[in-house]
Image (tube, rainbow, N blue to C red):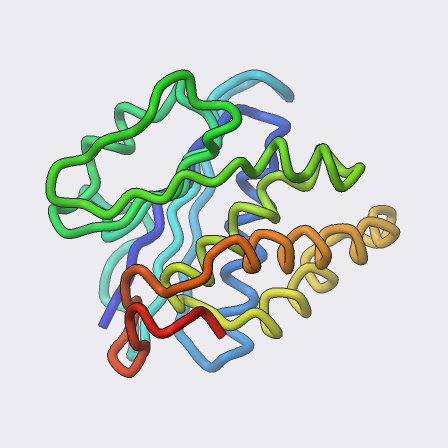
Length: 196
C-alpha cells in the first residue's frame, strides 16, 4: 500500500526538512520511500512544496503524483492547489495558527494544529514544521514517534546539529497534541485507540 503526503507552505517554514524527516523515519522503519521537493526562486516567503511517497512494498509511482492520500499545510497562501489534489477519504493537517480561516473538506478528515504558536511558546519558532509532523504521525501512524525523533538528528547538516534536541522536542510536543489516531496509514494501524 502506498501513501502520498503532499506538503506545502512558504519558504522558511521547514517544509523540505519536514518531508526529509518523515522520509528518513519511514525508511528506518523498513518502508520504501520517495520524496520530491519543489520551491520557488525566493529563499523565504515563496511557495515550497514536497511530495512524499511511503509504501510497505516496492513503490511503483513516480515521486510526483496527481492525487494524494494526505496533506500537511503550513500556510494558507499555497493551500488551494494541494487541497484540490487530496483524494476523497483523505486526511489533512493544517497549521491553525497561520491559516486565516478554518478548513473544511467534504469527505476528508481535517486536523487543525497550532504548530507555529506551540513552537513559538517552546522558544523555537523555526520548529513549527516539526510540531506539525509529530501531530501528523500521531494522527495517522505513518511513522512512529521514536523513529521520527531519531530522524530529526539524521537530516540536519553538521552546521545545524545544535537544533537536533529542539527539533526532537518539537516533534514530541506535536505528537502529544493528538490523543487518538484519526486515520490509519497502513493496515494494522488502529484508529481511535490512542496515538502510541
